[in-house]
Amino acid sequence: MVLERATAPLHGAVLPEPTPAPGQLLVRVHACGVCRTDLHILDGELPHPKLPLVLGHQIVGTVVGEERRVGIPWLGWADGECRFCRSGRENLCDRARFTGYDLDGGYAEYTVVDERFCFALPEDYSDLEAAPLLCAGLIGYRSLRIAGNAERVGLYGFGSSAHIVAQVARHEGRRVFVFTRPGDDEGQAFARELGADWTGGSDEAPPEELDAAIIFAPVGGLVPTALRALAKGGTVVCAGIHMTDIPAFPYELLWGERVLRSVANLTRSDGEEFLALAPQVPVRTSVEAFPLEQANEGLERLRRGEVRGTAVLDVATS
Image (cartoon, rainbow, N blue to C red; front, side, top):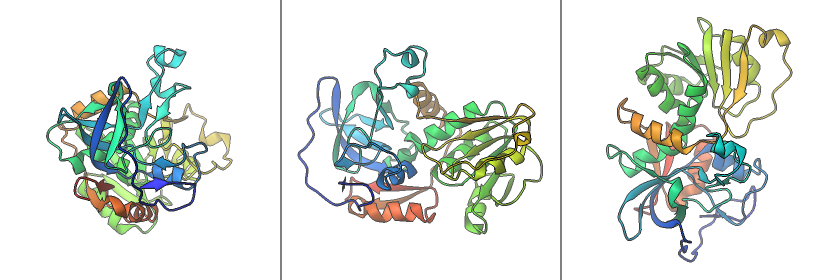
């Protein structure tokens, strides 16, 4: 399923089977998660995708000729030489290349991957269940780590990432406060099923101050909202790759050593740590499967907030 230009629907195409270069692996795709980042690319909110492009960066498949199962994440390549890479921050590499953005991704039957930038996957998960771990899970995990040792954690937006990170936070003994779109009773019920201590709309104040808040929804207006809910010394983490403009807010919301910061991409260390932790929790992913040819429907369902957990393309049976 190919993106020819921003704002145009994906269309089915028959492409040549990709040929791996030295150091790359040819992977037969079994499943690929549908991510909000895919929507941002489709909508032209991320500026310079490779076009035409095969979207998708939560890829589960097997290496052709080896039958070894691997997971392919967003970070597809980093130079290993810049000051960011040399300081353990390859997620900030200026020359980094990203799967389903600079490199063709997993909305296809085959893809190629740099053999250094794919992960072994825990056996406890089926292909469909494993796909959300590779971005939703990884970004949620990195965001929670950056939030520090917060006891009371607020999650703004309860989609793919939040439904995973809520389980990790509860496993670590944290208390979880979930904010959904106002009136989203179904989303709030889902959050309570996964152990949330409190749920409400994003227009509501929590019953007590938060030590950290992670914003998954791409809505800049939630930044001052989250700061208002934060205790002194707390942190607001913006977890998305794109967000609408943040409105002006009074300095008093930030004062008191509150911190506002973003999370960008992921490192291979994040992936190794999280994929080892996930079966210990155990993280259970909620997925809604779509055949490959219905990728546009999966994207639109995600846009409308109608997916419980993660939309995943079931490529193996398409």
